Image (cartoon, rainbow, N blue to C red):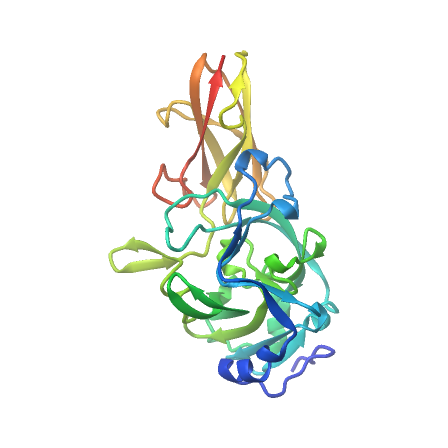
Length: 351
């Protein structure tokens, strides 16, 4: 039997309802913003840095923004199909070995318009502790197939009473890179990014990385609630859906800038970023709406970060449009349209 971490408590872990009555409502936090809140990130052509500055990163909060007065005292509860239910504070977690993970952080788009592409993306470095290291302390049941994550934020969205924001992920996904994160780009999380603690699932869309994390449960089945049942499930066939988990292959062009005018030269260089869960195998560009494609030079993928691509091309004078298409290591291509990861087109003029 593994020892408890210093400061951890294994007493009195009950149901979610009991948790709300006994603990959550007495904590020192308040809503900085109540209800839906979003901050649109930089447009793709402004994503010139490998690590996106925090001020330029995507923010989307379905149920509001919480402000916590004492982050180190923030407590999460671990329950469900485990041998040793426990509570642990952020202060306790900070005593564990710190891990940093650089990864793409991408919004899956609105659950009310799931197929609308948005290019809301950034690339950041998270700091925290491995979720797997924590779970090994609580003796997980091998039959538990899913990890539920529950945030302190609660309220209404899309006309539904959502309760507390709840998501899940496969237990098999919890490996070296899934974090209980308390830092973003080397600084403590800001309130809108989930201070003092959030889940981070590199390679999964941002909706799965629950902010203001309050409770983790191990279960045999998927979590209930509208964000796992009603929304964020893609229809793949009649009567068949797939959770919006893994980030599909996608790319954005940083140069040329949309709407720019270029002097005619022998060669113009296009550059941008591409990413996918599991990494990118290649990127191609087209100047004739996909009739022909040219392969780009692509840097070697590193972890869960986005990958830079470059390609030189010749163009004639006049109105032009360039499009990029990423291919994942699993062989999946960006679709032309109709999906959240549809092709991104950049119009420009050559004079």
